[in-house]
Image 1 (cartoon, rainbow, N blue to C red):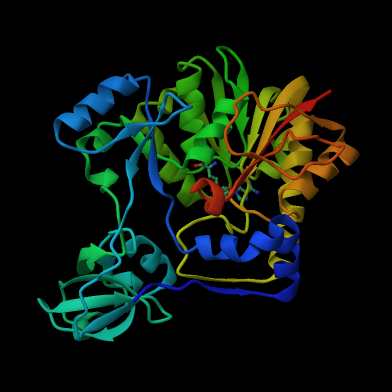
Image 2 (image 1 turned 90 degrees about the horizontal axis):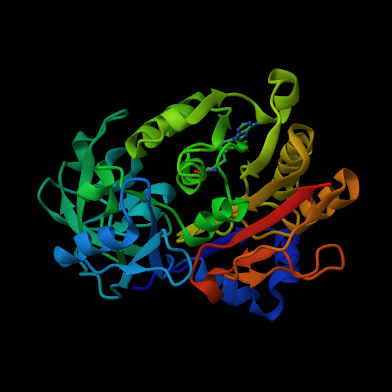
Amino acid sequence: MVATVFIDYDEELISTLSKVYGDDLYKFLDSLKRPPSRYYVRVNTLRTPTDELIRRLRVRGIEVYKDEYLDEAIYFPVRHNPNIPSVSNYVIADKKASESVILGSDLYIPGVLGGKFRKGSEVNILTPYGDVIAYGIAIVDSEDIKKGSKGVAVKTIKSLYEVIKVRELPEYSEGLIYPQSLPSILVSRLLNPQANEVIVDMCAAPGGKTGHLVELSKGKAVVYAFDHSLRKVEDMIKELSRLGHLSSVKVFKADSRYLHTDFPWLIADKVLIDPPCSTLGVIPKVFDVKRYKDITTLSKYQFQFISEAVRIVRKGGLITYSTCTVTLEENEENIRRAIKELGLEVVEPYIKVGTRGLVDELWGEYLLRFHPHIHGTPGYFIALLKKN
Ligand code: SAH
């Protein structure tokens, strides 16, 4: 059986998406059910040269390639297994667990929604919509699963898509790599961090882009990482210390919409804004439910970060604004407001990957977009802005 994507978006949301995708809307929606064609990780170049890391992996027979444009980006192939063995027992996984299992992760007990199975039996793992995404062996009896229990419920043997388990590589625990999508790797690159610059990452956790800022400036930029969630700040501290970057970053738990009042001494040369978004571009999805109202609420929230960035960045300073979503409201429309209401200017991105976003006289062809059905990457938006 082939997994189908169940997109439950209301009419207004579909209508705004068709302004972006036109006749390709169906192609775009269909592409959401597949993972990216390449699984990217960023190399921690402060610890190892990229070529050395590739050599180290290849010696062990691991298939890995260097990205064509970004020196610090490498990728592993993602394989498709259309024929999952069919067995009579099954377990239903929730959305989040399904979206990991479909790429080969084991199914953990908290992600189990239902099903009847015995320890040691063969099972199919299904999405909440009944699509088979994997075959595996049950590690527990379904009857023994109690509220609050943890651990693996089903060991995945074959999944619809397969990719190397990066987090199990010794290179991962040694802090040599960080799993990150290609467009996301581009964001810190576009900010081009230099020694001694003060760079503020407003929505930093779990620290993917923050760590990259450290690496690109060879640990010499003064990087501030803010996030308002304590749990996520803790995750970020773990990630930054795994990479060996903790001493190069000043981490704060704070609501970044109020930085100029809470940190009045803060003046940034550059600001990175990677705010919460509707994540429409995140792939693979086993289904998705969204309403247009969610989008407009997020769009207003996102604009608050842009307004605040303008208050803390110096004249002539640069700002990146990025999202892993594809709506006009969260992307181009926020940039339009940033130009008209805040006087920001859109700057030409100096790296030529992705696609030029929707063209407009306000920004020409300077906005970057990535589309799953065109680039095989998550859907993504990036703008490079300047305060005049
Ligand atoms: N830049 C990160 C991903 C950020 S996801 C990376 O590349 O790894 C968006 C983050 O914004 C979340 O961690 C969320 O906790 C944070 N966030 C949401 N509202 C915020 C606020 N008002 N102030 C600071 N951080 C906020």
